[in-house]
Length: 121
Image (cartoon, rainbow, N blue to C red; front, side, top):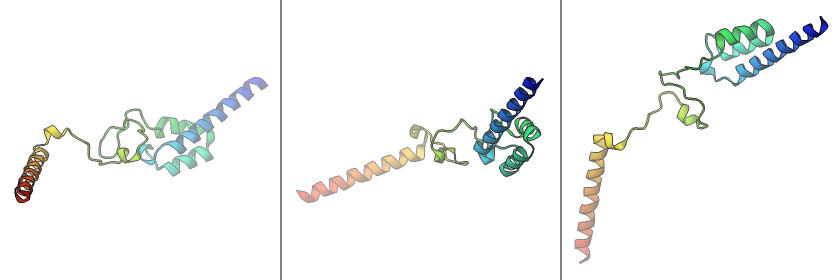
């Protein structure tokens, strides 16, 4: 009986430590239903119940989306890429305004080069 009680105590301690670390390392915007600080307090003050509630109601799902509806694809290691509302790069070949600007700039550079070569001779 003592062995079962000790094993159950170790399992609950492991669950509590796992959930506490999980709450602390989870980004604020991924926490569900409550702010991150509230989840930390719940897990700290109510170890068994708080841990189970965190796993059921607070822990982020695998299909989490970032603010703005963009899918979360995990941590890339570059926080500037995880910023909500970030402009997503597109192929330059699909952007007519960009291509038109490139052509105009190239023509301007050619014109300046012709003018300078005409002045030098």
